[in-house]
Every structure is written in C-alpha cells, then in structure tokens.
Length: 136
Length: 151
Image (tube, rainbow over all chains, first blue to last red; front, side, top):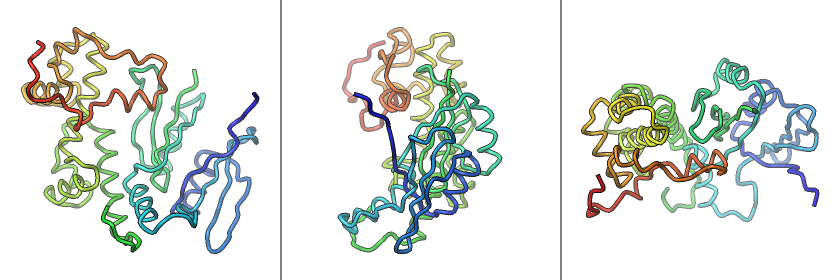
C-alpha cells in the first residue's frame, strides 16, 4: 500500500491572522483561498511538499452539528483543548526565534524531553496547539 | 459548558482565552517561583476569580495544575536518576520539601524516593505527544488514600 497524508484540517477564528501565522511566520505557501457564504477555507503547506496540505477552515462548518456542539467547539478552541498538530524542522532554534519575534504565544521553549525528543510549542492565532520537533 | 442552544458570547470566549494563557504560562514557567497571585496579576484578574474560573474551565484549580506540572517534571528527573529528591524539589519550583513530598505521594501513589528507586514506566517507542499525556500525573487518578506506604 502506498498512502500519503494528503490533507489535514485546523480551525481558525480569524482567517487573516491564521494566514499571517502560517504564511508569513512559518513560511508555508498558500495553495488555495476560497471564500464561500462569508466563510473562508485556506489551503497552506510547506514549500517543496505539494502532496501535503493543511486546510485552515471555519470551525463547525458541518451543518450536521447541533448548536450545543458548535458552542462546545468554540469554547474548547478558546481554552486551548481542541486541535493540535506536530511539525518538524532541521533548525528548531531558528524557527522558535522567528515565532517568538512574531509575537506568537509560546507554550514551551526548545527543550530535550525525557522521552528523547527535542521540541518547542506554540499557540496559533486560533488557540490550536502547535508543537515543533527537531529533526535528528 | 452549560447546555444552552445559544452561541458562546464573545466575552465568554475571551475569558476562556485568558485562562488558556494562564495555563500555558504554568506549562512554560512552572519552575519559577510562580503563585496564583502572580498568575492572576498577569491577566488582570483577582486570585479568587482566577481560581474559580480556571477550575470551572479545566476541572482543577491553577494551584493544583501548577503542582501537577511540577510533579510531572519531577517524575522525569527522578527517572533520570542523577539528582537527589531535595535537588529535584527545588529544580521544579517547589519551595517546600514537605509540600512537594506530600503532593507527589498523593498523585503518584508513592513517595519520590521510592519512585526513584523503582524507576518509571517503559515508554520507549511511544510518540512524544502521547508520552507526554500518558506519563503526566492526573489529579483524578490519584492513589486511593488507604494505600499502604511503599517507602
């Protein structure tokens, strides 16, 4: 079987702020930016890796959700327990400095974890938990 | 999270985001001499209000979350085995060895010295994000109070 991870999704609350974070700070390329019915879906991904994308999407756009579920998702995003992603880079300290200089909310400086990973952690503008591993 | 069909009002979400920043600050600065007053000042809340709202959002008080975070780090340092219990207590931001030992024992089910001798669970090969969650001491999985001491 030859299966790649093609697209994953992260919710946004302010599409322009999320776009700035992923494009300007992380340096991702923007592959699509679709507005429909007052909402936006923005497809981003790392340059040179066209086969893997993240869609920044309006949360709870699925019409099958109840109002209570929408409210819960909004609350979980605000309190920081909803969505997360782990990225990896060869130069963790450089990207940490860039993220910190951009004013992004830091959760953790680069440290060596006891389980053998060196990583740092941030919030994206929607409160998603973004961890970045050092590639060894 | 109350059962109501109305969307969450914007001010409620802003308050939750402030609590998130407090929780992230604990994760980042737990080894500093942090206390609830300092955390509350950082988000322009009173200590009492912060404690109540944090507990409503996360199910435990900011003090409890801070101590849990310190003990999580202490467990990792004890598994590493190159520092004494007292050194680890101060290393993780606890000012009192007595409070540290008591809370450690409540959360982990044995005193720090016994944990150090026994070593931790074998977590090699588990993805990092999962390791972080499964090895984290969890307040509602505290050892039952009646357990015999192991030390």
